[in-house]
Length: 160
Image (cartoon, rainbow, N blue to C red):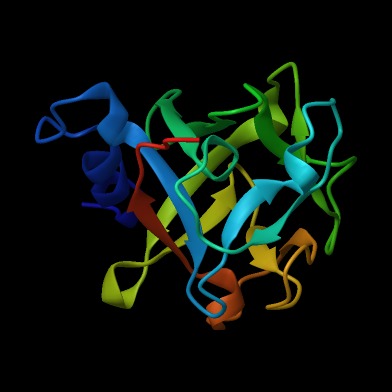
C-alpha cells in the first residue's frame, strides 16, 4: 500500500464518522505552528503563513478527496484553496485561491512519527516552512527530511 493511500485512509476512511472530523489544523513538526492565511485575509492570492495554534476557523483546513490519493485543501474560514502563487519553482510562496485548479491538488506522504510530507500533486515539491517564526512564508521546495517539511494533521472543530 502506498504512503499516499495510507494518508487517504486516515483523512477519508470509514472510521471518520462526523463531517467535522475531516477538518484539521496543519501543524509544522519543527515549529508547532499551523498554516493560516495571512491576517485571516479572504482575498484571492493572500499568502499562507505559519501561526500559533488556536481553535480558529482560519487555522482549520478541510480535506476533500479529488481522485486517487489527491486532496484539495480548503481553508474553513475563507473558503479558498491552498495553491502555489505562480508558475512552479523552488521557493515559490503558497497562497489561497478562490477558484481551484490543477495546482491546488496535494498528496500526503506518510513520515515516521505520524507526520506527513505534503507534496504538490505531480511534482517533487513539498510544503515547507521557511522559518519557525510567526507569519513566516510557506513555500514549495524539494523534500530534505527536515522538520520544516513535515506536518501533523490535528483534528480540529473550530469555535471562532
